[in-house]
Structures are given as structure tokens and as C-alpha cells.
Length: 135
Image (cartoon, rainbow, N blue to C red; front, side, top):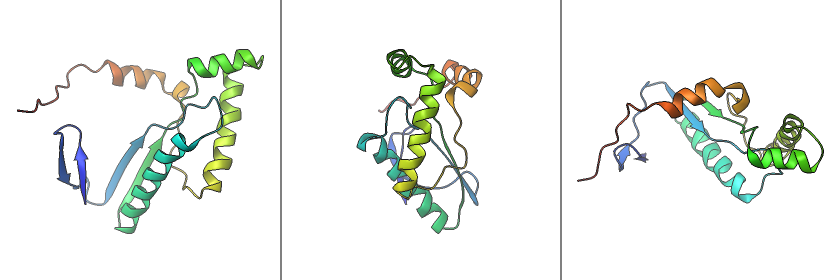
């Protein structure tokens, strides 16, 4: 299987770092409304990828977050005279109904952005990475 490597900017043969395990991270929905086809497409893509890798014998650890704080969530909370936490939880619950209705497998872990702010700041603050330039 070939995949596009965003670091090298080329299609390369897929070779996992660990020969028995594949780790996947996918940004999940921003939970301020019901999911729509634009949210379902990446769910489908990563579900198919995960199932294929499991079929090939890999142990897949799949992390897909919920963005549970965002301007859209805060706006919705203000409109509904609610808190952003209540709005986020409402639409996380709705997400599960839709995702399971579409027969998507749950990720191994579904962290909430608000529970990982320190890690997110560290990740986006990392400045030592230099991407190769295309010659």
C-alpha cells in the first residue's frame, strides 16, 4: 500500500514504525451541531483505513479527538442560554448516535481538546521541525 508522506511530499510504500502496531491520529468533529456529510467523510476514510490495516494483521491504535471548545460552540451556547460544556456534550452524544448508525468503529481513544490543552500547546509550539523543500 502506498501513502502520501506529507513530510517528504511523495507517495511511499507504507512501512509502520512498529512491525505489529500502527498508530493513527485523526482530528474529529467540532461539536457545536449535528454531524453532516463533511464530517462523515473523514470518519469513513479513517474507518476503512483502520479496518484494512486490522485485516492485514496490524494492531491499530486509533485516536480521534473531539474539539469541545471553539468560537462556534461558545456562540451556540450563548444562543441557547447554555454553557459550552453542555453544548459540546449534547453534540458528542448526538455524534455517537450518528457514527454508530453509520456502523463506524469507535476509536481506541476519543480525547476532548479541553482535557489536553497543555499537550496541544506543546505540540503547536514546537518550532524545531523543519520540513524539506522540494528541489
